[in-house]
Length: 334
Length: 269
Image 1: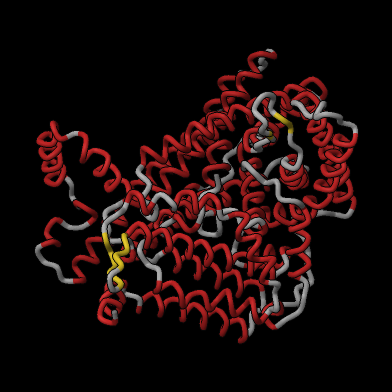
Image 2: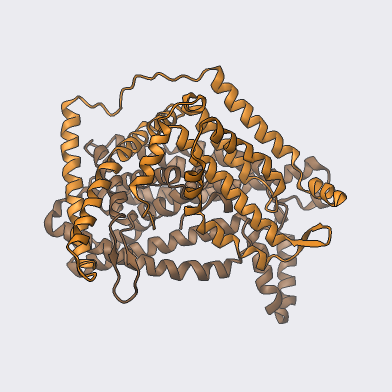
């Protein structure tokens, strides 16, 4: 379920590249300033372990198919958020280069879907509360199973949203969701079982290893201001200049929603029309452009409008993401 | 990270290609990485119905392929192996988008087919150029190029470690799988139980290896960074490569007003 360059617009790819690059910089700093510098060789070898582990399969009874270890969650549990993120990112970069999985522009999306989500969303906000400080057998099993399944669901959702926002594929959002989510629920449950069994075995044989994740540094190590500034610059560039070259065709999401709703909801069409009317009136930049630009169609004013909407959109998304990051950090410090 | 069951063999084959010698191989890795990045962004920036205007961009991967004397069949096979996801998503376009976009004589081509063709072409261009990049540049060289381009050294170190140990642990996993299948009759012992035991065994060996590695590094005064004798530099050849190709891509992009080309086509037929 790697996102592919061929389905991606430079805007979506660029924004996620920015987010990923910022996170790599942040995690590198965190890892470098760990007290215990044995993490560095550990990360490298664990990344190779993920590759090697995926060469071993097991057969799932009564289905004729086979399953294997996913990777994201087990790395987060063994190494903790930042180190796990760097490890997953490196694995994905090698995959993109050697196995041509996804491509370079989509690398940002893939690292976000398969690295950021398990390491910085699912691990701190789902796995840790579920597992607690000293979980029993059943509780640990359940925590691993649920986290692995949720991480994969969110990852698949990421692929669907990134594809839809890019607007290259004409597949409606609803059908795409219906295809992707159930398949990945099945895969995620299998992965979850494997993760749970392996974590259980680790705890039986070397319980000390699972404590590794709690070794977080005490003092703040990282300047949010600089990273935020860099992220902002990248997104502004992408939003401002990149948006000139965006497709003038309707956005994939709007288009597919229109298609889905168009035929079936005729009885409520007056409601929709009213809502649409309202939205046009309320929106500052309807359809990513100044409201007046439709009348005055000179190239520069429309370009400026498009740029401005790109810049605004990027700023808003960034604020959301940085806010989330601050939340994660606060939580980690506690 | 679902679905890496590609064998180590392909990895080794690409690695061997990267250590051959040609004018393209000799270029500084930074030049090649930067040019491919520009290329990928330009390809992605085209209109969703762009087909014919994308064709001139094929010049880049193809000319590198020829100059570096790469085996075309091998690369095409790799390309075909990873095609399914993009194709699967793209194949629905002709069904959902049936508005006629192009008239070629009596033949009406719907937007869906155009965008489907466009997805195939984009896929070939982007993935093809990445495969060519890795076939003309060794992975350690790419890592150092990334480091010198500003990627944090911790991450570069991670990439180098990972790459080194993929081969070691991969061979170990292969031996384990072979041992299991030699002892398995009628598919017995291929279930979750034995699998989990194998995996945990592999994990112990991995962790033990990490411990030995760390001690070895400490005893050799590891300071958090690999010291390198750097022989390649960013000279005029590299500058020409980056500026020349990027200029070509950007000029093509600016000159490719999809509407103009469509009008021209309609005039011809």
